[in-house]
Image (cartoon, rainbow, N blue to C red; front, top):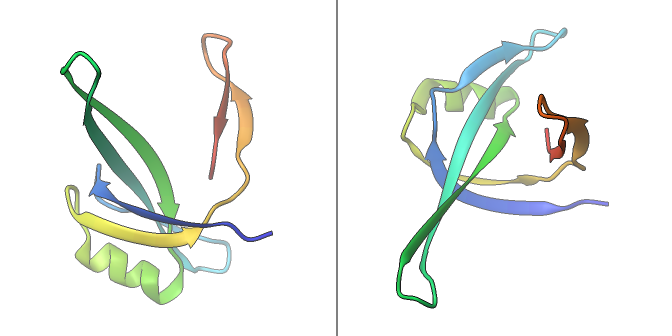
Length: 97
């Protein structure tokens, strides 16, 4: 099954470049998407969701060359199935890679 997602947000930090065992460049991007709205009482609300994004090959090179913290980024990609883990407080959490 293939799931596609489109995200528009800002980088929370500079791309973190990593290399695979085959020496492919693979930057990891921390992308923040912030939603603003007004609740029923007229108060402004804000919620930020963080996405971890990985790019490969030529796109990886371009991302690491041109993107920096704060850059506005549009990502169209595939969603991987989330994995579950237990955090330090013993709460079960889920995370997509």
